[in-house]
Length: 268
Figure 1: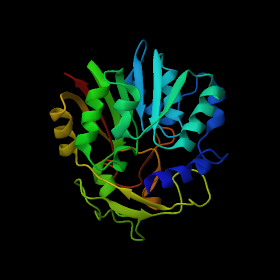
Figure 2: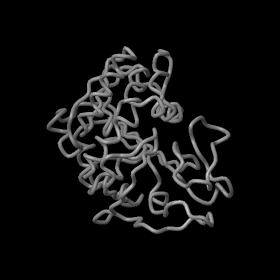
Figure 3: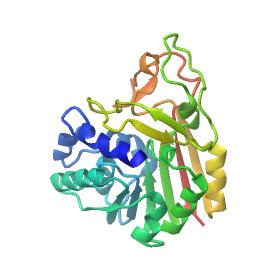
Figure 4: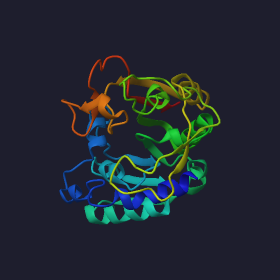
């Protein structure tokens, strides 16, 4: 179900009104997501980087522009990987794209293959087992290697869709469950109808994520919660951020609820 959904999103995201792919013609350009991450992520000079669930590669190509020795993007969608390869050629970026789901990442890439694993917004919400994900992260990293993730906050994922009264209401699970099926024929980028609109999402509480990483042999070194999120999930309740390009914040009372978080961890 999720593979069909993401395959169907690719033509919307690569259309002229989707992701801004033309911006990568500027060799200094970084995606808005990576620009936001940069103060915490830092330069990647000499590092071997793996980007899990890379989609069409806009953040992956941006990572390559931060000085990494090698960058590999992994995704389960052949259409997304084709788009990523086209973007890397357009941007003259040396990026390898590999087809696999996260569970198969170690088979596809090899154990202890990287110094940094990067995973971005809207990634682990598609995975049913956070402990399995953490084990894969640990197996891919070399000793001393780092996980960097900025992700939608589990409180945000638990909120209902925009309401006419503007109230922020928790409707969906905060903790990991068997998953919630959604039917949505619009994507967060581009216009048009998603041909395969059904998907299943999985939330993971912060405690579940911490516990999974610790059990897998990683030490969490940083956790920062953010008021910003790089798309508008709550309709009229949100406005463009006055401080960060292509980020959104609550129009009123933005200190009430975290929208995203950045977590970093190191393999022991």
